[in-house]
Image (cartoon, rainbow, N blue to C red; front, side, top):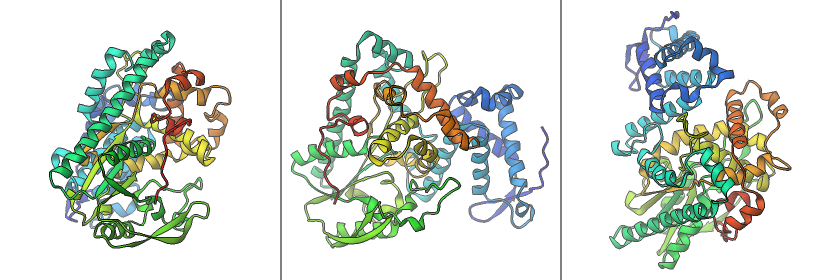
Length: 484
C-alpha cells in the first residue's frame, strides 16, 4: 500500500546525514520476526487477526508495518526539515511503537533486545561472541529441552499428564537437583578464579525480575562460606532516588525498573571506595517515606568479597573503572522451555510470563500490591530488562536456570482457585486502550486455565522449604540475611 513519504535524509549516530532507505526498516522488522519463528508467534485473532487476513505472508506484514513506521516518522513536521531529519534512534523508537501498537509483542521484544545488544557492542561493553541477538540463549534452551523431553515436561499437555498420573515427585527432585548442581558449578568456578590468582573482590547475582536472585544469592554464599570466603552484602535499593525525582505516568505509576532509577554516580563511587578499603557513608532509604533518611558508615575488610544482588548488576556505568578480573558475574533467568498445548503449534510460552505471575504473588503477599497493578507496571519491567539486563547476559561467568517445570501447576491455584488473585475482566476495563497489559492479561489467563494445578496440600509435600519457588509462594525455611 503506497504511503506518502517526504523524508529524504536520516541522521546517523555520528550526526552525518545519509539517504533515507525505507527498505532497511522493512528488513529489520522481517528479521526480528523470523528470529522468533515468524509473525505467527504474535497472532492474536481479536487484536491483529484482520491484519493477518489482509497480509497472509510475513513479507506482506513486514511491508505494512514498515509503511506504518514511515507514516509515524512523517507525522513529525520537524523531520521534514532538510537539516533535521529523524535520527537512527528515533526510527528505532517508532519501529517499536508500531510493532507494539499492532500487538506484535514478541517481535518487538526481539527487535529491542537486538537493538540494545548492538548498542552495547558499539559501546565496547560486550564482545561479538557475547552478543545475545534476540535474547534467546539457544545452547542453554537446547540443553534444557534435551532434559525435559524424556520426562514429558516440555509441553503444557505433558505437565497435565504428570499431574493426572501423580508423577511429580521424581520430576521435582530431578529439577531441583539440577539447580543445586548448577550452584555447585558456580561455586567451583569462583574458587577456581581465586586459586588462579584473580583479585576477586566482587560477586554479582543479576537477572530479570522474579527470576530467583535472592534464593540463589543465599544458597551460593552458603557454599562459598564453607570454603572460607567472607562477604559484605550491599543493599542497592538504598541508592534509589527519592520519589519526587521519579515522575509519574498516565496511570500514576513510576518507572523503578530502569537502572537510572538508582543514583549510579554515587553507587559507582562507593563501589570503588569499598574496593580500595575506604569507608563509605551508605544511604539509608525509607520506602515508606520514599526518600533517603540518613546514612550508615560501611567499610569492607581486606578479606571480604562485595556481594551484590541486583537487577542491573551487569550495567556498565555501575562498574565503570572496576577491574573486570575483580568481578564474578552470575546471571539467573527462568529458562525452562515450555510449549503451549501439546507442542504442535511450535509456540513457546514466555519466560517473562512465569516471572510476572511470581512477582504478582510476591507483591500481593509482601507489599500489599494488587496483581492488577503489577500487570500494568510490567511494560516498565520488560523495557528495563530488554535494555540493560538480557542483552548483557553474555557477560556472565555462569548462567543459572531459575525456572522449573512445576512453576505453572504450582502457581495456578493462587490465581484461579478459591480466593483467586487473578484480576477480574472488569478491573482491566478502565485500561482498555493499554494493549500491552491486555495482551499479557489474556495470554497468561489462557495459560493458567490450560494448566492442571498442583494442590496446596500436594505442594506442601512436594516442594522443600529451601526450594527457589518458596521465595514467592511462601513457606520457606531458608534464612534470608539482612542486607547491610
